[in-house]
Amino acid sequence: MANETANSSTLDLELDLQMGTGSIKSVRSELMLPNNQYKRPKITLFPTEDQINQIEANLTSQFSLKGKINDAKALVAGLIEASNVWVDSISLSVKTPTVCDPVDLVIKKSVPISKKGRIKGHVSITANELLQPAVAHWPKKKRILARQFKYFPTHDVSLWFDENENCEYDTESHLFPELVCKFTSKRSLFQKQRIIDVVNDVVLLASFAARRHTVCTGITYLYGGSEVFEYFGDRTLPRLPLKENPRGQLIELSDFSHYMKNAFRTFSKLRDREEMRRLLNFTLTGTESTLEGDFVSLYAALEMFISRFRKDQDLEFIFPESKFGKLRKEINKAMMTIDFVPFLDRPIRNSARRAEIIQDKTKLIKDKLGELNRVAFGTALTAMTEHYSVSLDDLWPVTGKGSLSDIRNRIVHGSYFGREHSHGLIFAREHLRWVLERLLLSFLNVPLHISNVSPAALALRHPYSAWEDESKYFK
Image (cartoon, rainbow, N blue to C red; front, side, top):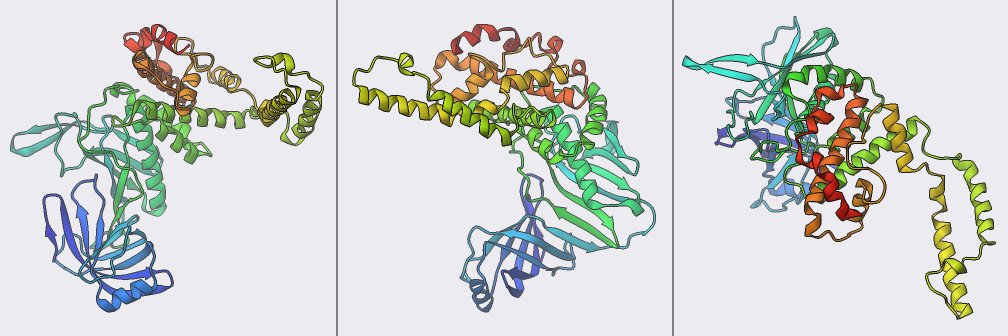
């Protein structure tokens, strides 16, 4: 039967498993549904001896399942299915159950629902300062919303964000740990995946603005005579306990609606939204990550963004790749006429040894010739800042000796940084973040002056005013 603990509820199941080419029928199982969004559902299998023999014959680490919840009194009763279920190890003993991770778990409960009016539901999401409501609680538990973010991304979809009524405000992090994005949609135009995509994009843009990793964890909606619960098991969840963001927000609450209006309008028109989603996620470095890890992640996002700009503006190659091969051959011929002896670091009297060293160095040069045809990173960055009208003159230089690029190269190649570099590395990371955020804000058509990376907003930040003193340790 169904039972509940402080952290989860457990439901009895009867499942059919599809493993490889085999099907195992009526496997007794249990479903553990966590009572918070920061844990994942788990399914435990209790197969019989005969079912274990069938599992062994079709052994696989990934399979699908479907079945029903046996307990009619359960909180969530009905049908269950998942087409993508993973397991680290499958037990071949009746004494040891097998615990599985369903990536795309769906539960359907039959309910009497009106087939008229708009489709209603909600998407469960993790904490975010800019999306959470301001709530006043009055005597007799009366709840009054003092502020709520509402958004209308398309003509037929309405979104509004609220606290999960089952969680309490965390006074330490100043957050509701769990939020919901409630939605309504015209019944005739309802497409579940489109709702999920729209909410995902709004939440991602809010994550960027709040500098906090926020994800959607599932969706619940009423449709076709069923109440449907879907869990998204393919998301990287933030860690508990939540912490107050030491960097503050990129966009203040007072400017968030202005930001979202411009950013979503621009983002929704992109043809390569998946690439931009990945790029924005790279900017969301966590409080538990290392300084070097943050730096490499932010620089990877910058490289991705510049690479995208290169392709759009035909700034990848100087000459067409098909024709550069001929030019490369001409350069190789010209190199044969150059006397490299004067360029050696020291004279070598042994002629055979000298010829061998020159041959090796010539080969090393030839191996690098392919890079000659690529437009320089600094050139592409300059073109990008001009295109988006972004000034980076007040920030730590991205290219050159002792630049952010130089620091990144030294990190990935294992260079040693001493105690004298510690403050400078922290400052450089923040400047790299500001460079990236300025470029992305301009790309999203968000005015710089409403952000916290404008020169005026950064003026009181110590890493902004003192970076030049620290940069000397990297030159």
